[in-house]
Image 1 (cartoon, rainbow over the protein chains, first blue to last red):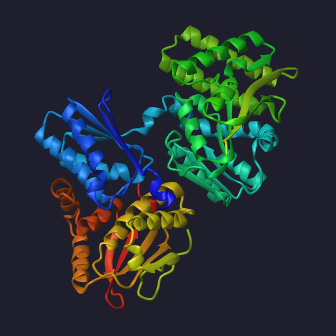
Image 2 (image 1 turned 120 degrees about the vertical axis):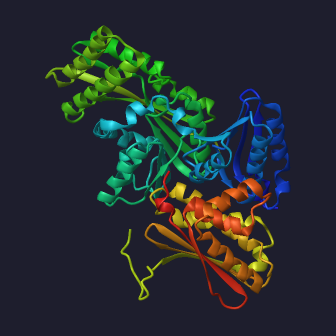
Image 3 (image 1 turned 120 degrees about the horizontal axis):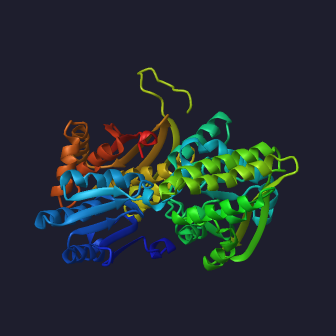
Length: 392
Length: 173
């Protein structure tokens, strides 16, 4: 028997607390008998629940028609036998066929509804990924790249490697890496279709090759395990409410002996002179504001702990400070202006902040800009870089 | 996307991408060959699609169903040939495998039914009514869920050739 046969190809489980039956992996049986225990589990679950049974197929990578029919029949029969029972099938937009295929069930039985899950996972991402933020993201990457192009070599970056950039956003980091280090292959994944469209347009216009942009959920990726020499994930763990889930996935897709590279901020440590006090107050408030939306923009110094707890070894941590002295101070000022517009704008409004608070909050950003553009001023934005090696 | 070529009959030219041939006897010796072949070929041909991972997942899903159909052939001698070619956003699978004359007749009828207006309705009826999907329903599902177009072509000897065009690149999220 080959090792292939020994791998569990799919898993079914029932969570009584959440009334949720979930099935994941690759379900391609030759005969229905192979599904016996899973079908029994589903029937038992149906027998026990009242109200709603959630059927979670978010991580169902493949299911052949033979299996789909038998699972569907059980659910449809239950709808007919127990009209008071509702089924909610949770699919993932990442796994292209699931929403289409399971979506048909609601056309057969009105008690079956099908929902795509992903958007709920990113409570705050919408603030940052849509609208006019793209130019600012590009400027941010330009500023951090001045530092990271030297730093990356100390964290496993070298020509010819196979790498993944998870939460790649508009893909500008992947492009810079491609030009500077010539990895043999880059897979760049993000959950924002608009960002990926932008990245693909850039790739076409500039005839860039060797980058595969892919739509995906960083916490549940379709990528195979142990295939990348280096996995990067920049400025992203800090905007997920459960960063440990992402790290688990980064670990999974990294080759044994390969490295995972993460960057994060500690926003309360943004600084400037003159007007240090006002600037400091505002960035402390930024951290609290993100905390309100379940995002931890203070994560930077916690990177070491997260990497250790995820099972990495040979952990390397360093910091760098993006300042108004790197290149054009106006770039720095433009980034702060964009932050002010989102943080003191939509986010503060969403939290219900009053005008007095918003005015003081916004003043700190203005003072940071003032410091950045002042002929004798200094303005800084600190970043924590950390990487860990997946054990052999 | 490359230039569009048309042959004399007006049919666009599909550029060959990959082909796998194997003895049917070998193929039907293990069910997992369907999964192996569909997964391998999906990965190979999806690398230069706009979203390679998503494309590979969709392609494997559709192609595996076709291979499972071929697996159930009742004619165990001869060759299975899987060929994938491309024209723009469409990938074409040509699956040739030995079959009995009555099976060939069955495929011709099944494919003509797929093109019918009530394809979606018949598919839904099958999901809600049949214990297991028939080979006809499997082909129907390709049309309903993947916008596939299917046809049967003549093949040498006791064989049938299923030609399936999959416009996966244009399939919405």
